[in-house]
Amino acid sequence: MSTDKPNAIIVIFGATGDLSKRKLFPSIYRLYKNGKIGEEFAVVGLARRPWTNDVFRENVRNSIEQSSSKEEDLEDFSSHFYYHSFDVTDTSSYDDLNNLLEDLEGHYQTDGNRIFYLAMAPEYFGSIANQLEENGLKNGKGWTRLVIEKPFGHDLDSAKELNNQIRHAFDEDQIYRIDHYLGKEMVQNIEVIRFANGIFEHLWNNRFISNIQITSSEKLGVEERARYYDHSGATRDMVQNHMLQMVALLAMEPPIKLTPEEIRSEKVKVLRALRLVDPEKVNEFFVRGQYGSSNSIKGYREEATDLANSTTETFVAGKVMIDNYRWAGVPFYIRTGKKMKEKSTKIVVEFNDIPMNLYYKNETEKHPNLLIINIQPNEGITLYLNAKKAGIGSIAEPIKLSYTNNGVDDINTPEAYEKLLYDCIIGDTTNFTHWDEVAHSWEFVDSLLDAWAAVTPDFPNYPAGSMGPEAADDLLEKDGFHWWPITD
Ligand code: BG6
Image (cartoon, rainbow, N blue to C red; front, side, top):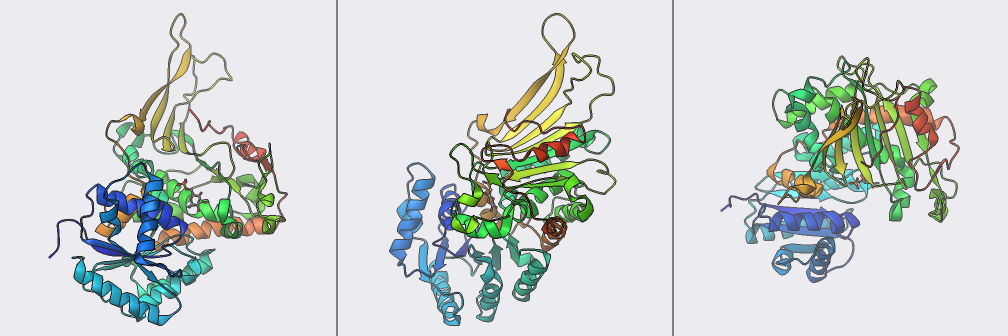
């Protein structure tokens, strides 16, 4: 018997890790509490530690309590969680897991639907996918889906290799590659703001937009993740996925239908049109940085002994060009980094100013119309217009029209992971990255990293707590622009 709510068993590889604790357990709880999933679900946590169900459930309850205020129903909720000590390299572990899943399928009405969520070190992704296939875990009565966290490869070649391994066992439509930015409310809103508003969409091209700026700045450093991060750097960590996904959503053509295939095909066209980085011109288009100590905040190289001579970039800014009819000549400036001044993700669309503005105070002053999409911490949009300064005269001053989700009653926007998990349970792949997107993004990022690899950077080059190296400002200045502030 199935219920009207989606039902499945979620198997989490890496259930004792940080992601499970901070994001996955609280998200599953919110889906439960908000009635998106009913009683017919179970979560099986896998990791090496020899935990019992009781210890696991206590951890689940603690993680939920830490992520929100006092919660109810935690006992009932956590009774759906089972722990299984697991060695990903040992075939017998998979047999035992299959038996456990069959038992649970007898207990909960999950119709044999199984989600395998890989929230662990990427070196095991390929072999786990294959072991699941070889040991018959994909042969349940219902559907099977594989959710994969990043990083998806280290460059195009390794991503291809990983993809081939996974595709050996799973079809593309069973693979859900997570990019958690695609679960953010305002990232999902980019498409609606663009395509549901004539006043924007008709102007959304190189005739009316002078440049687009995307900033995702973080105050935190690398915390406990130095080992991963030093091998990755800001370009692989943020640009290959989140930043280029936002570029694709901002630049894509309207889809002919709101299906995952149609939307993806428009995004892929943008990623195919990205101008690859010419090694001769890399400094004209990109700036890399690493934070140094400042005002008692440690520099990156002082965060751990292994980092003492690191040349890994903790900041990247760049001018991304999209060589297609709509965007020829319009720079998409991107900027992201650790230990910056603020935690903020924001998109600024700067429209061309009118040719002769009689209403500015003087000739050098300019305040073009801006559409700002605030992704976090505030969620909303702001439109900057010019209007007459109150009083005598006809001088224009910028005024802003703002909409923020925070101000709307009863809106408590779901966390990205909550939405993505739900999409996976209902089989909606729209907000997951298809292999074609991953491949084109890597191709672009590889062209940049290869160009950089030829020269040893002079790091550190920006103080912790700042907005990055000065060269990131020069990047825009030489085009006659500047970064708009990230705080309103
Ligand atoms: C992750 C990166 O993908 O995104 C982290 O690995 C980064 O380094 C994080 O901190 C930023 O996500 P958010 O949602 O806090 O902007």
